[in-house]
Image (cartoon, rainbow, N blue to C red):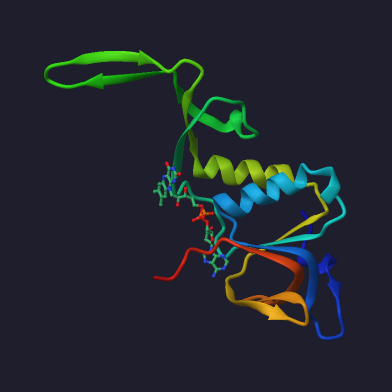
Length: 161
Ligand SMILES: Cc1cc2nc3c(=O)[nH]c(=O)nc-3n(C[C@H](O)[C@H](O)[C@H](O)COP(=O)(O)OP(=O)(O)OC[C@H]3O[C@@H](n4cnc5c(N)ncnc54)[C@H](O)[C@@H]3O)c2cc1C
């Protein structure tokens, strides 16, 4: 991962990328990881904008799957059977080829950071996006760390209710 100094600086001080990823949580980091693994996108310059350090285990994800996935090495636990218990009935069911897996948030954040660490395609800026809009056929993010533009923006900020 690069520091933002490597971005192309235009006369205006606006920093330009191919893709902006707004939010470095589950969706944003999954997208970044998959971009990093896609050879056809090897030349793309990607900026991740995330206000938090993501150094806390702020959540745990649990999910069903019947196939290997890229994040298997950070699975903290997986269940191969399901127990149903009630006062009248009790049975343990094998899950066949399905598994119920659990990943800790902090393990996921660290895993993706490590996977992107030596990849010069990616830049991480710790900043909060204040506005995201379109200007001159570019996506524009105004943030607490200045303005960034890109061909595409992928926004995973939680909705404001
Ligand atoms: C305690 C907890 C347990 C959960 N367990 C499960 C589970 O087991 N299974 C499941 O499917 N889901 C679970 N969820 C739901 C969970 O929110 C989603 O699974 C998942 O994290 C959503 O991914 P996301 O990328 O949309 O949001 P997040 O992972 O929340 O990522 C959004 C990111 O956007 C960033 N952001 C916010 N505002 C801005 C801004 N202005 N500018 C830039 N970045 C910004 C945030 O800091 C955050 O990092 C759980 C949630 C919580 C809180």
